[in-house]
Length: 187
Image 1: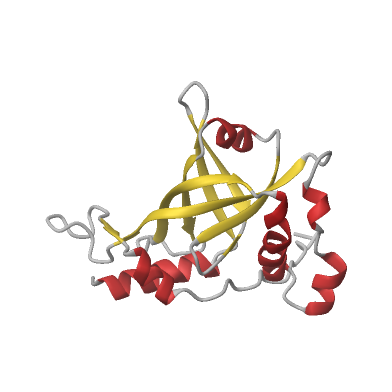
Image 2: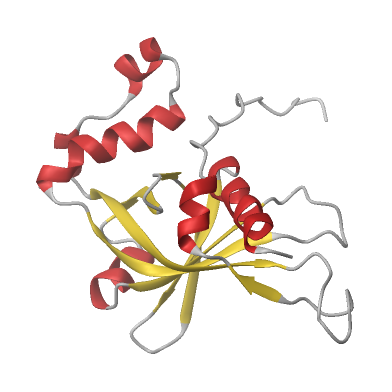
């Protein structure tokens, strides 16, 4: 697989899935993984909202180095693929919150009238609110090689590092989430 193909796969996962799995490290060195709804930027930043007392938020406060995995849970067995990343996370500063709200909520509410009515405002992420807006700058990325391991083929997964410049070039804006459909209570 060449870098252009790897970047296309990475860009697809970076923009098309609605949830990612954040991996942080707890003070006792135990890993902590949590799913979050997110949005992304062309500069390979991941934006999400979390409570300041959530375990992953406390972990980021102590150690900003995190991993994020983006994957489609509906992929058929035997066709695994995803985007694996490493980066540094932090709370957005007051001066970045307007931008962060625009990035995050424009994905969630792509229609301008919905955005105007439903998007939260920057002040909702400042003291004394218990929630903050977070950003991770992606520093490294990998995808699975569809051919598998060079020796064992598809018996073992094999990752290919993605060139970040190629990923930036392949970036497409995140897709809005699908409309929520309530489960049929009769089932």
